[in-house]
Structure formats: structure tokens, C-alpha cells
Amino acid sequence: MIEPTYVTRPFLPPLEELQPYLERIWANRLLTNKGPFHEEFEQALCDYLGVEHISLFANGTLALVTALQAMRITGDVITTPYSFVATAHSLLWNGIRPVFVDIDPETLNLDPDKIEAAITPQTTAILPVHVYGRPCDTARIQSIADIYGLRVIYDAAHAFGVEDAGGSILRHGDVSILSFHATKVFTTFEGGAVVSPDAKMKKRIDYLKNFGFADEVTVVAPGINGKMNEFQAALGLLQLKHFDAALKQRAELDRYYRETLADIPGIRCLPLPDCSRRNYAYCLIMVEPEYPLSRDELYTRLRQNNIFARRYFYPLISSFPMYRALPSANKSNLPVASASADKVLCLPIYPGLEPDRLEKVTNLIRSVIES
Ligand code: T4K
Image 1 (spheres, helix red, strand yellow):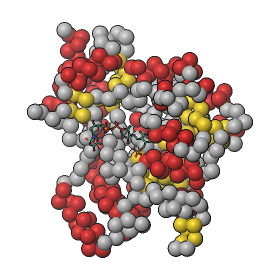
Image 2 (cartoon, rainbow, N blue to C red):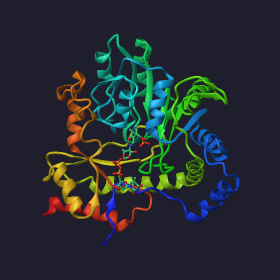
Image 3 (cartoon, rainbow, N blue to C red):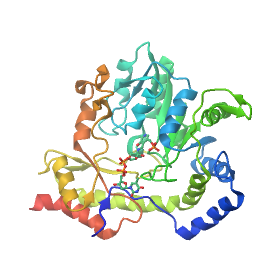
Image 4 (tube, rainbow, N blue to C red):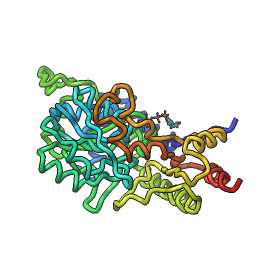
């Protein structure tokens, strides 16, 4: 049986390149708890991403939950319904009430024009997502946050390596979090990180991810176990060496899709995001009414042909049982997010995607209008 074409496949460096890292772990038997690879990887990431303070985590969700704890966020937090569930779940895990605000139709990120109307005396922070690695309007969001005295926590799970004119996108807001899950552009199998603005915040986050230990006998907070282990950190160091090449391949695939699908009525690619370095984390199309099939029919047609495209982010977070009773979860409050979730389809994009598989995807999409 031919292996299906998945929406993504993890980029893995040649196995022999991992061997020396494993030998070092086996030799020193330091497996976790701030081992040498952990420390090296933290520094290497700071250097690569151009940020000063990074705390590594076992996964992105723990990074997000812990960042909110570290900042002592309570009350209501404004966020997007158009993301992976972990974004809003991190609020519930902290006893915080999510307040969903609609998205911008161009960026698919929180619409800055709609944030202010959702602010109440209970609002303490904004949790925007750079969805698909497409940057939020960070300047507008920050100016709203400044006026109302709100904190800003960026869910940058998709935004590894993305830069705007001023440098890393991760420098915006009070903190940013990353995910290094297997499906992400940069992976340590599972993994994540918090980018902090200063050493004090990093220190607090580092305590919290290690049960709250400040030293061998001092526990300063009810922390959790969110630590990244040595195997993950070693993988991260190795992956970093290949990331630029992987990004180049993604850019080429993205270009192919844009050029090949451009003339198909009802298939719309969003404009390239306005930033100085993109990561092409996802390749999405909007299936509009002029196309003969609905988004779900196209999704099924591709599946029947062994192509597993994904409807990220359908259903909206706000429609899940633990959120749908919230006043802000009402569909009438979220018209753009609702329409986008019904139209979007993420196509396969990953380094190593073979040309024949790529062509099969675009040919199938085109064949619908030609039949
Ligand atoms: N915030 C945002 C905005 C996020 O998107 C995420 C995670 C988080 C926070 C939380 O970060 P983490 O705690 O996960 O670090 C995936 C991921 O599980 C999830 O990490 C990710 N977002 C989300 C967008 O997608 P699924 O349900 O799509 O995964 P799955 O297993 O269906 O994988 C999709 C395809 O990828 C498979 O069909 C084949 C391929 N694949 C997957 C895995 C796991 C592989 O080829 N190899 C693999 O090992 O959720």
C-alpha cells in the first residue's frame, strides 16, 4: 500500500548525525533536570532566534499554562476562537475565563478593531495567536494593552523563526510561547518554550517548571513538572543545524502551490504575511462558493485519494462543550472566524514532500473544475 500524503511530516536529520549526541547522553547519564544539552540548547535558541531569555519546556501547552501562572493572570482574558484548543485550555487550567473576539479576515488573527469592545473591568490580559505563523498586528495590540493596562501573552506555537522588520516576532508582548511538537516546523518530538523579556521573568518561569524549587531545600511556588529532557534538547540542537535548509524547501513548496492554484476559480490563497522572514508553517487555501465542491467535499475527495489535508481550525474552539455557553462564544459574535473555519483547508507542506505527491494534490484540486 502506498503511504498516504499527510498534511505534515516531521523533518528528521540523518540518523547518523544523532549518534554522537546519544553517545554523550549515555556517557554522562544526565537525562534531565537542566543537563548539559538543555543548557546548550537554550543558549543556541536565544542566539538563533535573536532573543535573550528562553525557558525550555516538555511541550507547548505546559509552556503556556506556566507562563500564565508566572504572570499571575486571573479574571477574563481576551483570546481568539480560531486556534488549536490548547490556547483556550491553558486559560481554563488557570481558572481564567476566555473571552472570544473575532478575527481579521486577512490575517486570521485577533482583529484589533474588535478588542476594545470586549474589555471590561474583569479583563486582565490578551492572549493572541500568530496563527499559521502569520504575525498578529502586534503594534495595535500593544497600544490597546497599554491604554487599558493589560498584559499580552503571545501564543507563538506556529511562529518559530518568523521575523518582522524589527527582528524576532517573539520579542512582542510580555511573553511568547513556542511549540516544538512533531507537527511543527521545528520539532523536538514534543517540546516547547517560553520567551521572557527579562531575567527576572525567566527565573520565575524556571522555578515554576521545576515544582517551584529555587534550590535544594526551598520551594517558592506550587510549580509543575514542565522540564524538557536531554534527548529532546539534543534533538533540538541537531535540528537547528538544518532549519534554514528546511525553511527554504517550505518556501519553494508554498510558491508552487500559489502559482499552480492561482487560476482555479473559488480556490483562494491568503496573501503572503507581511514580515521579513516567514516560516511557511502551513499552506492553507480558502474554498469559496465559486468552487464546485464545498470545503468538506474537497477534503473528502482528497482523502479518497489518500491525501490527508486538514481543516485547521475547524471546529472553532468556542464551539466545544466547555466553551460554548460563554456569551462571547456565540456564533453571531464571531462571524469571520465562523466563516473561515468553514472554508479553510490546510494542504500538505513539509520538507521532503516529493514532487509527484505535490502534483497529485494540485491536479486533484484542478480536476474538479475540469470534469
Ligand atoms: N497553541 C497552538 C496555536 C497550537 O497549535 C498548539 C499545538 C499548542 C498551542 C500546543 O502545543 P503542544 O502542547 O502540542 O506542543 C497537532 C498537534 O498535536 C498540536 O501540537 C498542534 N498544535 C496542532 C495544530 O496539531 P493533530 O491532531 O493535527 O495531530 P495529528 O497526530 O493528527 O498529526 C497530523 C499529521 O501529522 C498526521 O496525519 C501525520 C503527521 N504526523 C504527526 C505526528 C504526531 C507525523 O507524520 N508524525 C508524527 O509524529 O494535532
